Length: 149
Image 1 (tube, rainbow, N blue to C red):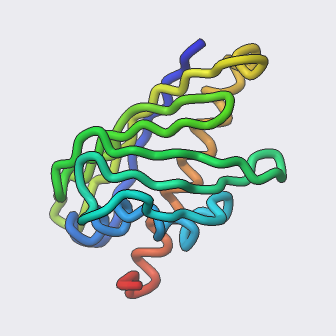
Image 2: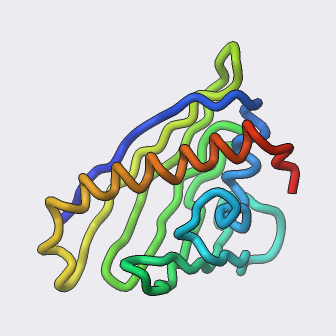
């Protein structure tokens, strides 16, 4: 059972700034209250093949997530694969320049496994709402702080 979740918004910050903040998963707890921790587990600079281990809150419980970048084109696009106990999320985020900053978009395919697969129809609705909230949090974070760390 797979569901697709897509969306976009404009952020009044440079493509490079938006991309760099998003590319480092360790920043996400600053703008996503459901991401409680993230650690880079691979060596070297962030790029293709970089891996992170993260913790997200789902229904009030912490859940581990393994994230790997499967393609990396700074400052435009990151393709990734995130694996949880009952779901795999594959897709990308993209940063495109606009006259006032960045058009930021996301496109995910969520594949459910085990008993969670029966929640398929809800995943699309909930996923769209959650992703919009996460990236609106990013927009707020970047536009209302210096966001440099």
